[in-house]
Each structure stands twice: as structure tokens, then as C-alpha cells.
Length: 502
Image 1 (cartoon, helix red, strand yellow):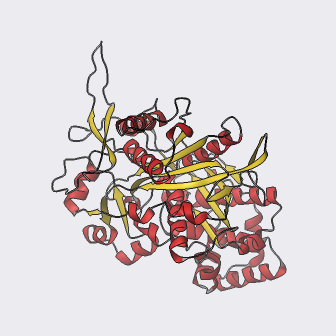
Image 2 (cartoon, helix red, strand yellow; image 1 turned 180 degrees about the vertical axis):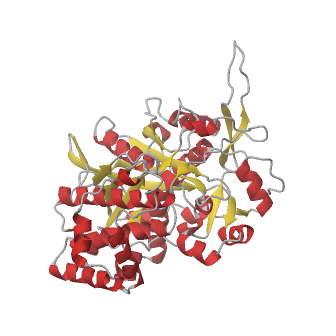
Image 3 (cartoon, one colour; image 1 turned 135 degrees about the horizontal axis):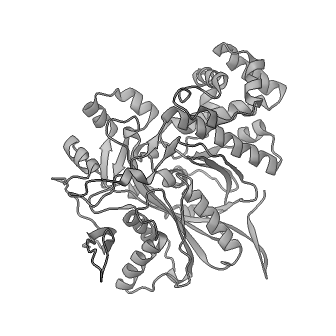
């Protein structure tokens, strides 16, 4: 296998992942309840979206969630804060257009010092990365490059944190979510070596499949809450097309770099982790990638593809022609074309493939590890992919599966659009680090919201009856309001760390 490495006096060293830590806000909406409130078919939502999602609380922000995940990382993995030379934040929910990860570092430093421990190293780099849901993957790549170059001997933490919220009544409402996942990256990793040299990248400007123009913030009423509502401008079907197309191009880039034969390679994989805005999206993305791989494969592969096409009433020659065609997805970024399929024959064939017994073997089985647990996460934007990875590794440990030496293929995506396909190779003795992830523990203590509580919390109004006492986490203590000539702190959040009573 190809490994990401750096040169030092001792030769070459692997670089990769050594830990994961998770924070989920406790406030939960069960989608079955939501379906009752909104008169929506539960069977469809369960099959396409998932089981539940989380909302940030009245005293929470993307920064409090991120800092809590980082604090858990330090505690769960017994890290020396002075060894941390890189603290990167991947998010599309930041509310400060100047500072980013330094806010988190400041929160962590004060909590560490208050507990009698040293702060994070003063020479720690603190970048923020933004590209929709791909910001966390770009932050991870930045951290790996730091470790391979001037950060030799240091440790890096990347925290992916986001708040996915949509207007009530919109098609995106059941796909909301909030949370944070921290990743520990270092030389000689204990979980998995990350192969950047063998990864695939793709990007293309797609105008408006999913955007967050600042104009949305103008005129928001914040009289009852300090929260800014971050509803996106989105176009659902077009966004799905963008996701699939960009993933295909990133895979093609990886195939070329590694000299891979697509169908043989995809067939060899046991576990795949993808960006997951909702349950059905990665299933369709991986399934289309598999159909394209069959189209590029052996005579037997093409015969299999022809069988699905025949069932769908699609001419195989025309299908292969569509797969080979260069398509400009931006041509569909207009009102009259948004609901058109860029790959109509492929999508028709996908329906036949999904109904076949092969779908479970070639798609669902490869996406199975950790998939049940993350049905209760909702969409976490940048944190969706690392959360799935955390859930999968913990599940593998609990089930006694041996992953050492296996390739875990990760596929990240960010609207706008860009995609990254990055192989992880599991290390010997990975179980010790996986045993500290505590994903299931992070999901405990959920507070199920009533319809009235959900609507108030969602809309930024005061919420009554929330029986929750923060413990071992950061909260917003107050928000500045001063806008005087001699002193200004309007909109600046002040934080404190709340330790458990025990």
C-alpha cells in the first residue's frame, strides 16, 4: 500500500489517525414524533432519512460543541496539551468572520489551567477551514501536511463541528442535526494510516445547489435568543446530482493515481464511509459509483450492468454512452432544469439495481458498519463523515471484528462543489485506541423534545420545561452587547466550562 510519510533523520514514518471523540447536544427530536406533528409518512422518513436528530441548546453554539469534543479528546486519550501543534476547525456554521479555531483554543486553555493542567502549546497553529460539508476533510488534510513537514514530532487535532438547520416546513427539515467530532492525528498512528498520496480529489463550481449567502442574516430578530438561524439556500434534487457527479470524478482521480481497475477495487472493499446528509444519499452515491465501475469493467461486469439495464427498460449501449459523456452539471442550475436528471438512464438503471438481490451485497453490506448508530445523528455537515467512522470503529470493536490491515475507504463531499476520496489503512492493535472513542456514551442522556419545545428551540424563542443540567461541557455564559466608542463586545460570546458535580 502507499503511505503518507515525512522524511526525518530516522527515515520515513506513517502519519494518520490515533483517536476520535464525540459531542452531541442532548436535545433530540424523534422523527416518528416529528412525522406525527407534521402529518408526514413515518415509513418513508425512516427509510430515506433516519430515526432522529439533535438540536443545539439555548446556551450552545458551534464553538461550545467543538470545544467540548476537543476537551473529551484530551481527557479520553490522556494527551499532553503542550504537544498539540495544530488545532484545526472544520465548519460551515461559524458565526465570527474573523476568529475561528483560536476561540476553541482559548476555551480549552482556560479550562485546562483551571483544572491545574498546562494549556495547549503557545506555538499551536489555529486555522479554520470552510467548504460546506468538506471543511473537516480539508482540515484533516492540512493537519496531515503539517505533521509531514514543519510539525514533525507534534500532535494535531482537527474538530469538525456544525449546526444543520432548515426552515420548518421545508423539505430539509427532517435532515437537521448538530454535533462535533474531534480527530487526533499524529506520526505512527494507532488507529489508521491515511494515504493522501493515493487519494482522489474533484471540484467544480455549481452556482447554487446549496449556499449560505450572508444576506440571510440581515434583519433577524434576536430579542429572545442570541442564536443566529443559519438556514441554507438549497435545491434538493440538483444537490443530489451534484453529490453523485463530484464523487464519481474524485473516484476517477483516485483510480488513475493508484492504477486501479474500478470494479475489482470496489469489489475488494469491505467497509466504506461517506458523507451522509441523510440515510439514502450515500446509498445512491455508492450504487451509482458501482454501476459506473461495472461499465468500465470486464465483459462479465458489463453483462451484469446490461441485466440491470434490461430490467429497467434501458438500452445498454445508450447507458454506456451516457456514462462516457462529459456532462456539465452547471447546465442544470436553472429553474426549468433543476428537476431533470443529468444521468437519466443511470438513475433508471439504479432503480432496477436497488430492487435486485445484488444491492445488499454490493452496496448495503459495504456501508453497514456503524450505519445503524448514525441513524440517530441527523445531518452533521462536516462532522457527518468522522461521526460515521467513529461509530463504525466502535461497533467493530464491540463485535470483535479484526480490521487490522484492512482498507477503509472514506468519501467526503462539500456542496459548491468538491469531493475527496481518501483511503485509511487500519493499524495493528487498533482496538486500544478504538476503545477510547466513547461514541455510544456520547449518545446517552438524550432529552426528547415535545412539539412545542422543538418549535421554540428551533425558532430561537425561550423554551420552558427543558430538564437538563450541563456537565463536563462548555456553555455560553453571556453575549456581549456593548457598542460604545471606548469599548465594544457586541455579539461576542463569553464561555465557561461546567464540570460535573461528582
